[in-house]
Image (cartoon, rainbow, N blue to C red; front, side, top):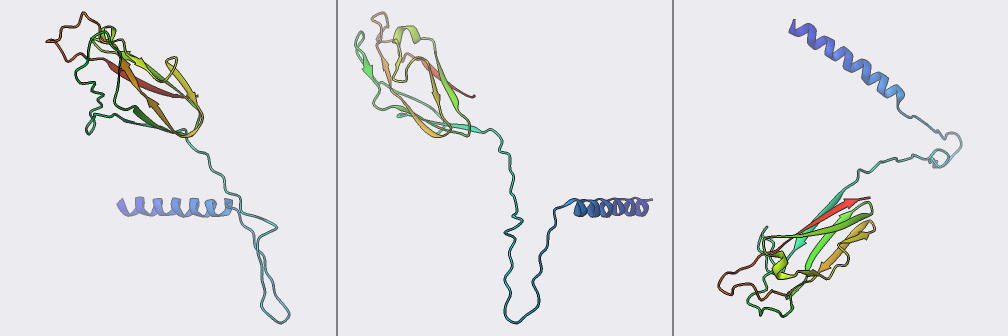
Length: 164
């Protein structure tokens, strides 16, 4: 039984192999006669290469105070009612083979108390394809209602990329 199944599989493979070979493109050229070396090429029937590329997008986020996979922008100790600017920007490195839109959403328990502002504008940014680096510098203005002994106070940012 096993031998018959193996033979059947081999026969099917050979049939499809021959059919596949017969369906493949084939062209030949020959040069002969006369003295000297011959040169031939396929300039009258060039090989065409076709490929379709899948959509692909990736994002890497680097923060000034993060470590490993922990993303952190630490303002340290700052005065209430005074706008403070982060020591350096959050860097988003985006690779996309289609134009994309980058949006961000602020969140966290203390978002309203910190009055977070981005250097990226309008909550959305449209970019072209290729590799792009986006720099987002955060500014916060802590409210006077925040207890100095109660911190640290936390806000979060979520970045979303969507290919168009």
